[in-house]
Length: 75
Image (tube, rainbow, N blue to C red; front, side, top):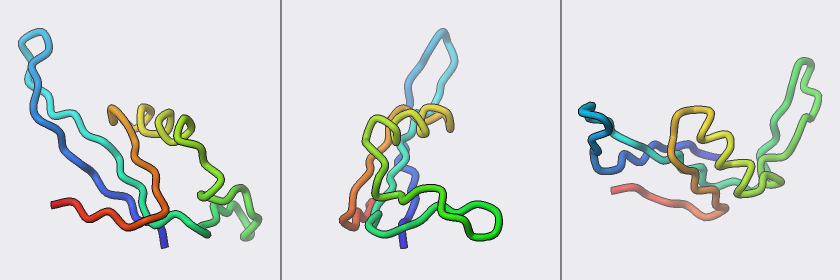
């Protein structure tokens, strides 16, 4: 099953405001399905491209996304 993790990056100052940027990590994406109403298959997560994952991340406020089939453990 795919996992979503948040990787906090070092704090930065922008116009006097401190923010903590973050990246979205989506790992273990091999055979995950995105389904809609009634279980209708919309798309397989494994079909996402890195560009599409980055666009999703940006919409969530992240600076980037890491999309991988392997397991990434954040320490």
